[in-house]
Length: 275
Image (tube, rainbow, N blue to C red):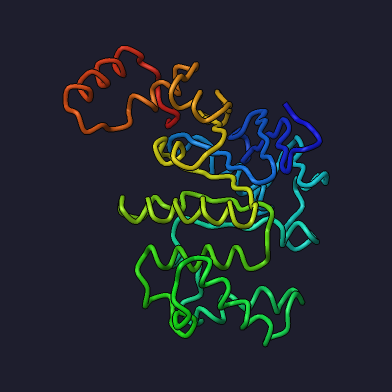
């Protein structure tokens, strides 16, 4: 499963919270420049593995290897280059953006703090970042509260890009957006990947969203990956009953097909990952 070309390797990762085991022998890889979708219901363990990759969650055993270095259990404060080369975009951009800072301050702070640019160079970089995420240059003087949800998420994406990462962990980044805004933000993620070569670990509960953006898809249920493969195979011809359940649960516009899906879903009778 693993090879020397993998950017990220999660190898037999186990995570316990007290006496409760929440991740069991998770094996996952992300190649340079690709998107791996991580899909499953609430409580399945998706965000837990994302937090472990970011260094903000514990690892009980196993390895998380990024660019050849085992970073499992190493906090962001103790990381060196990995701290800049792995970034994150979260579900709620408003809570992850400092409301008292302008967009310019939000985007220049990480560059200056890590010594990657002078204040003047960072301000020039802001123009480039705003252009990349399709926001006007005058957005730099505004505060997060002055933007729509979709625009705030673009600011969050620009901040993640500021340090030129090789991997971005995207944790439900479009789930709080309406459908039309979701589509535009997904298109932006795809365009940015084509421009920069960045890889994404894209976490979502929505199989349709994952299908729209991913090269490969991993399906999580109750702390385990039950299926992992090429996007077309997993989302169109799933082998595991739980993946079939997720596929059949996705709504379709045709009421006849929707009724057929519900009947097939009842026949599968696969329990959810929630207790």
